[in-house]
Amino acid sequence: MTIRITADEITRRSRDIVHDQKHIEGPMLPILHALQAEFGYVPDIAKQIIADELNLSRAEVHGVITFYPDFRDHQGGRHVLKICRAEACQSMGGDDLADKARRLLGVDFHQTTPDDSVTLEPVYCLGLCACAPAAMLDGEVYGRVDEHCLSDIFERLSR
Image (tube, rainbow, N blue to C red; front, side):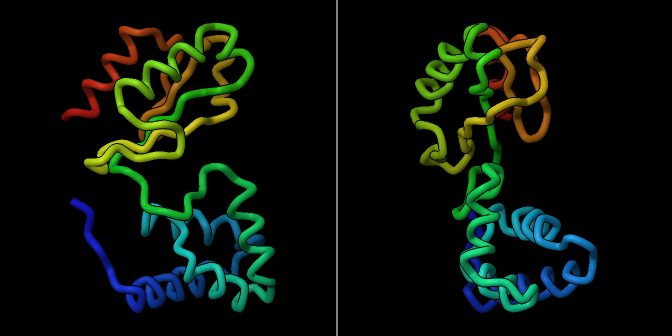
């Protein structure tokens, strides 16, 4: 079940996060990470707040958000499954792994299952090239992912 909060509450909490983080050196990424940790995504409302507080344009803030693939502009699922799409993983069966994950979840990359349980995301290197193909579930990395390992990962999702 997704808890809905009002735009006023998102604005208030975003202002608090930006205010708490804006004084550190290079505050943009820590602010964006804190917003995503708080809401599960970076709310559109927060872009102007960040821009105003950091003396940037809204376009500059939007550019940073869209540059980094880990930042979302919409609510994700309770779990995030990332499948590596880099060359090493593709050469070791990553395409088949991605196809199977999409088929089992019934969604494509950047989509969330209808029950809001899983968001499927591509990632372009998890640093496990020697253990390809790789996947990550909620921050936990898996190497040499085959059909059986993917089944184990899906079993954890159902708990």
